[in-house]
Length: 310
Image (cartoon, rainbow, N blue to C red; front, side, top):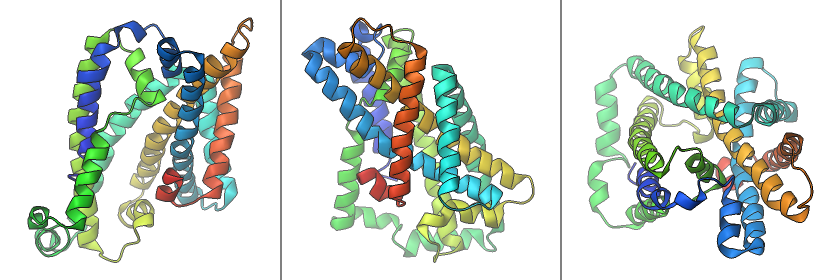
């Protein structure tokens, strides 16, 4: 919890320190264009290429998550499920554009607000001695609060992660969010609100994990979502859970894919062919190519953490 709350400070820092100073960039289309204006065409190209490559891992992870949800709902397994997941996201992002991205972000927030607290409440109700079981986890296990006060490898590792998460990163998608604001003041306030909501969501997710641990200490960490759906979802709720998780993954995937497509067309192709009239078709083709590359990554590496590190 301590480490991950650095992401909220990251959002606050991004809005209060970075976004508020971005007056001159609000009429641009991408982070690559802004970097090119400051440092020249070579840096613009480097920014576009590195931005696309860095986000491929994130898109691939979302493909895997959506694939898992399709498998749970349909019973299908294997590469065909991943192909279905990638096709859904690529088509949605390619033909929906930034309007579709914004819509799924709103849906993501609504789903987080409903889905996670409902699941936490259901698990709590299923525990035979909920209060005693959770107290045991929080007082006797690795989550005991007093462990925070001991300076060892674990606490030092959490502190390092906390510092790492604080460091602001103007990824293509985050930069795109700032450009969508009416002005820098709206951007600053939006990030402040997002930081507050992010804190609440992170705490509730951590609480959900503690409830699962209290219920079954032998759970495989890679199977938590499927375990929740199979164990706690009654008829009707299972479909809601599957759709909810797919919406969360879709929101992230199409945001990243849309931002990467803009980088590819606006910052790589257009500078090389200045006389070429850039069209929406080119952006759609870029979405398909980048999505295909992310699909290959998703098929190559199945572990979420290893995929992100790779």
